Image (cartoon, rainbow, N blue to C red; front, side, top):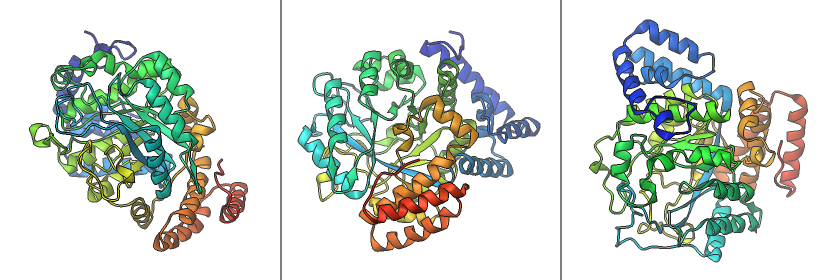
Length: 472
């Protein structure tokens, strides 16, 4: 197989030979000062890097250069996403699954995990619980099971989620993380009004992928890897990539992830809307020590920084798999979305105590959403509950063109402040409200256009009076 970024065949656009050559090249040139300076000069143009250039930066272990990489990643994040952090929560619908994935407790052979699938009434109860926290954006998750979790069930759940208005609560955008499917089913998801379609590759190493997925439809590497092309063919123009770091050599996964992003850009004219960076974590029936590719917190942060430099316009997501301390380090290096108050079990949000028997993985950051919002603001980030771009049609290449030109800031910054104001009034503790009101007042002055500043002030007054859901 030959490497071809524009090919629609998985083994050509994620080419094993090209990845191995890239790792070798990066290792050989990691101390090549002249080359690294050229790569960083290119990165400073904010146009991105290819997988080979980024791999050289990842391999470089010179302390001064690593600091330069981190500083550049932080500045690029500020340039395109400001100091905003978008918040979301996962909603697990069902843990029925026919696959045999060795790293996931939902695998078919796990007979001691309770199997559960939410009814529409239970979906409603979970959504109300999430709305009562203050969430506006969800990522729905379900195992792959054509009998228990057919596409019709997913669509019914999306319809239920969007239909629920409780007090001032509303879920304004549903992102979907379900198994690879057909173009026809992706069209159905698009028509249901989803935001981003998310699918983790798990690992780009085909040989290891097939070992880790011994049984079930997910065993088919090509079908899984080519899913984003089918999703885009089905009209979903915002897709989210991700690997599960720890399953294979991190250098291999890093190169494969960027090659996938390059492929989407080359074929569809727009790269991934988001990239997620989860790591293997402990869960029922799963011991992360069984996988010998774990990476240090330091390398994990370096990967995030190099991703931000390589794909400057793409949102980056970090979940509650990671501890508060790790999230604090990694956020400044390029992360633009985080989960908060998450529960990774089916039906977990309606339980007083966090249930562990149906969790997909252990949650390392157990803080409430209010505590996460408070923490973000104390670190000078604006917690954003904005979903405006999806609902205003700013998706796919339209979003990317606005992001690349910097114009998206004219929408995102004021939208973040208005949605934060809603949270403060409807859900926040007194301390969070106090900090938030001061932040909004300070950040209004950072809105570039006086007309927009005046409109935001008028709308903030209307929000105080009970109106909701203003957006630019």
